[in-house]
Image 1 (cartoon, rainbow, N blue to C red):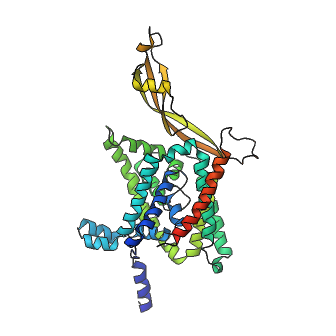
Image 2 (image 1 turned 135 degrees about the vertical axis):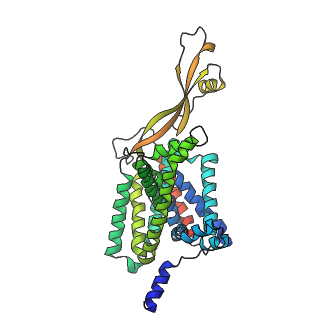
Image 3 (image 1 turned 30 degrees about the vertical axis):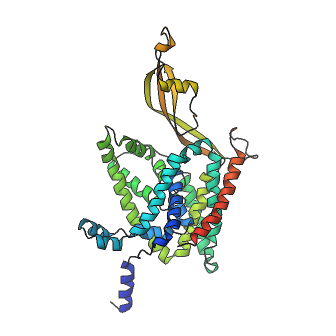
Length: 385
């Protein structure tokens, strides 16, 4: 083997070192916060925010740093070697931001609730954010690389992204092998811009299955739930390990073409992010309680029924003994309901004939404007290390 070939072979085995410094902690944590907030929205992936904020290559390299050397060092308790090989500083700061976002947008500002109560505002924000970012990212492609080949890659990426987000969810088996494959594809999609891992699970018919198993953790079905989730996470780990290396190689050797494909994914995802949609939901009763008429929960629901435009809510059901002599003796069903999106058909306000009567025109416009303004701030963050 020649010296030149030896050098090339060595370079291929070399893992890119983590150059994260503590000085960039605030900026990197903010970028992680944006990734976490995006992961909460169906149809938007954390990979989208990673690409927009300029840390996509670093994210791929961090995932790729978990290799055989890291795993060997972990199980042999050589923690010094592990920390040297693994991009722990980058992952720690980024994940801190992600966790803070998930906690903030589920506990303080319930983003998932606003997606149901004010969908035009939330989706308008992300539509403006992604559309503005497409323009910013296209400017990152050197003029010398803007040719037929790269624009063909952009078109193919757009078509593939559109195809993915418009697939109809299917009924699929719950075997070990299929759940493993579902985890592989879903976790791989999490690092792809414009394609949501949760949406992949929905397409493969495993979204409700995974939520059900996660919901069983901590109760009598914990052991069964863990056993059911093992193939999902094994497939996810395998998918991330394989796909991150493929993406890293593509970005290293065909950066402009790969970037154009990823931008195409963003463009293709705009269809499902469009704020004005005629959305159809299915309601599933997940729990039924039988309570007395004087129960505090029953009285609270009688005085102030819960808003049913939420992902979960509680409502009163039937009176089980309507022939009781007095109301105090009534036994009433109290239903815990999950509300899930099953389809959405985009429309153009003022043009489309078929559209819902209760949509918010200005909600979508205000969200869109705020999303565009946010792009300016994100573009500034992109220039920070």
